[in-house]
Image (cartoon, rainbow, N blue to C red; front, side, top):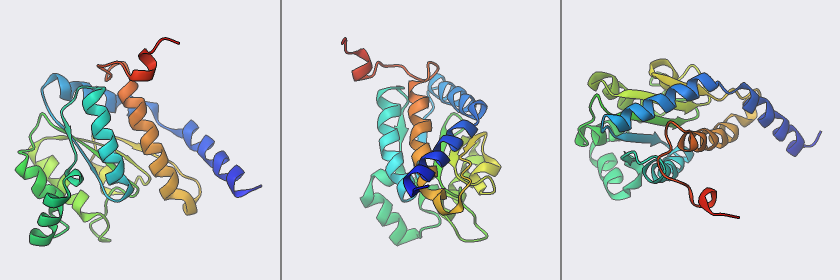
Length: 199
């Protein structure tokens, strides 16, 4: 079997294993956040940060949920890293945004953060703050043992069978899940362009 064929076969298996109950729970949390005039804060590092920017656009435009990502403002992000350090960068940004119980955090991460192994500790600190302030937490991750999956109110774990492709599959399915969510009847508030154009 070629690499491409094997990769596609893996992707089919992952798609079939996605937990639709967890996705439905995230849709409920998004709807509740909008109804309570809460805000959605999307956190990611690396590829997850890129996803966060795209998802902020979709949740603001399509779902009409006030949404932000701390990685979108590179000046503030790097100033905070320079002055305060990497570990606290997202938590301090959220403190400045006055994170509260009506708000929702959405994490895009492969591992979900692990303070003991010093992996994505900025995500861990941000989620600890969310727990302290009563904000809800959801995520799409590739590991069920990371901090996000342990503390989230709803978390989709992308079950990748091949350890060599955990990152590409997890990041690909993060995009699939958030696009599912913004098109979900409980979340979508505005028509999308191509779906509204008559053929």
